[in-house]
Structures are given as C-alpha cells and as structure tokens.
Length: 442
Ligand code: DOR
Image (spheres, rainbow, N blue to C red):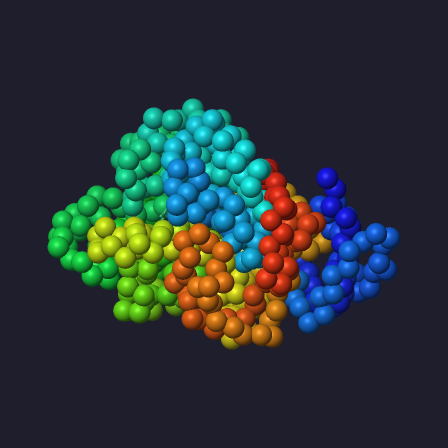
C-alpha cells in the first residue's frame, strides 16, 4: 500500500553539502521528491510541523546482533526494530551469530522473511563464514558481505586458522567484514588470568595486542588478494595507527560509540554491563580513535548492539556474556558530542548514514535530496534529558548509558515515507524493506 504523501515543514535540513537549509521536504511514496525553502501543501498530504527541529538522514547501523532466530529471550526482530525506530535508526545490517547460524542461503532467506513480517525499519543480513561453507559465501544474496569472526566466538563461526582465512580471502570479490581479535592469544591469556572474577580483567585478557595481531593478519590477506575488507568495531590506538600508515583504498573501518565514549573506568560504575568484545580500552585509546575518525582513518560508526538479559549479565566473570545494546542511544550520544564541540552535526550524520551507504553500496540512502529514499529522522537539539531504563524499547531492558544526560533524541522517525516513531509513540504497523547492495567498493 502506498503511504499518503508527507510534507515536512519548517525544518532545519542537513543538506548533502553539509550545510543547513531552513525549509520543507516533500515526500511521495517512499521517495523524497523535493527539498526547498517553501513548498505548497500537496492535496491529501500529511503535514509535519518541524519548527525548531533538525532533519537528518536516517541512521544506518552497520553492525547489530538482533538474536532472531533462536535467542529471542534477549531480543527479537520486532523489539529490536522498535528500538531502532525510536533511536532514529532506519536501516540495519545484522550479524550471523543467531541460532541457527546464518551460514546458508536458506538461513538468510528465513531471516529476510521474518524481517519482512515484523521489522519497522529496513534490513540486511550478513552471511557468516565457516571453514566449510565457501560456496554459500560466494553466492548468498542479498547480503552486505561475509562476516568472519577471527576471534571471540565459539563453534563453527570461529575462523582462526590462517589457512582457512586465506581461502575465504582468495575466493570471490564481495566484502569481508572481520571481528579482529586473535583467538590464540586470547586462549593463552584466559589461562594466565584464570580465577579472576572481576569483569575488569576482560580488557586485559583480550588486550590491545590481541586486536592488533588480528587486524594485521586481515590487512595482510586483504592486500595479498586486493580483497574488499571492512574492520568491524576497531577499538585500539595501535590499530588506528596501523591504518593511518597503511590503509589501501579497498579497506574501511568502523568504531562504536562505546569505544569512543567509555573506557576501562566503566567497570567500576557498571561492572559486567561494561563487558563487550572487543573490550573497552583506555582513555588514551578513546582519544586516538576520535582523532582517527575525524581524519577519515576510521570511516563510520556502528553500535554492535548485542543485547543480553540482566540476569545473564549478573553472572560472575568469566560466565558473563559480552555485549551491550546500542541502537536507541547511538544518535543522541553522538549528537551530544557534536553539541559539546567535539565534532560537527554534519560529521555525525556522515559517519552514521552517508558513509555507511557509500561503503556498502546501498542505493538511494544516506542523504536528504530529491530521488533519495525518505528515511529520515527529526531530532531535538535544544532539550537535554537522561537515558532512562523505563523508556527503553530493547527487550534486554538496560543501557550502559543510563543516567547520561543527552540531547538530539529523535522526535519523529520516517522509514520509506512512513512515520514509524512519533513523539514517544511507535507506529508498529510500519514495515521496512530489504536493503539492496549495489557494490561493495568503498
Ligand atoms: O561483545 C560482543 N557481543 N561483541 C560481538 O562482536 C558479538 C556480541 C554478541 O553477539 O553478543
């Protein structure tokens, strides 16, 4: 069913050149058809008064773990997509560590079908690499790319042998996205630090060197085969410095808001809730990552939304699962940084939308211009309020940023020309679409 036309009026619109225009945006079907200082209300159009609000392209979150199928007690595609709509995330790319693993076309089709029936926002799903499924990795469709866990994973999805990795890099052309941590080093250090139950030890066990070793190996293989490589959640100063010196044109990297804004001091305040992979690092790492992001060494931002229940998170280390939710807080966290002078709003929008669309070859997304899809978020940059557990939509029901006083919360989120979230209310009948991936060139 075609949605009624929309006219967003009196907004402060972020234009593709990074400048703001005070004006109107006309939407017909799922597309933006006009952006101008003043547009007459078309017959039958719904008018949205955006006075005092800033209009940004919808966030594209390129790394989330939404747990369906198989782990729905933590999250499912409906609850996760509600959290997305509330957080201004209009598209997501989801990871294959569900049950069953997304390692075959059948498993990918199953996720696509589930998403079509219950997701309020647009979706894409990675195909997971195992040593045994090479043909699936080459043929699976549609997918943003191949996810390789070089470390921090159990079972079939772990590909930690260089020979198996080399086979994956050698065959085919599509993007390979790596979780870069060196499993051999992690194994050794787990033995060395056995009997520690303070979750803070996690950052020492899976240390900077473990991340650097894996990133070095991925880079080496990518250069050997000129293979499109994306480094997921880059977390250390050492990796950022490596890429600063040696980053081929076909390599991209992302960073999470957690690795920019939290560090090992978070274990003192939120304990095991701060445990994630790769782990939180030092304040020095925070600063080097920020600089790398600003300089374009790191290309964009992902949340690594990885929900676990509070009961699971309350277990003693090392039984605590790693991961934290993020899609509801990422945009206000980053916009708050912009309002406090750390970066600009245009940079935030580039890192959270435009650059992601470009890197994954997602057509017609990541900009507010005629001909682009109407995936939009109107944010309020005047009001500050705290992140409250009681307001969260994610099924896991917590955030590492509870109590943080933020601005830039979404007021209205539009997905494909339909209002999916409006001033505290989710429009749960709205459905997103499967994303297309035109090319995986950076
Ligand atoms: O901390 C993490 N948890 N990092 C990942 O990359 C995976 C994730 C999960 O799925 O729980």
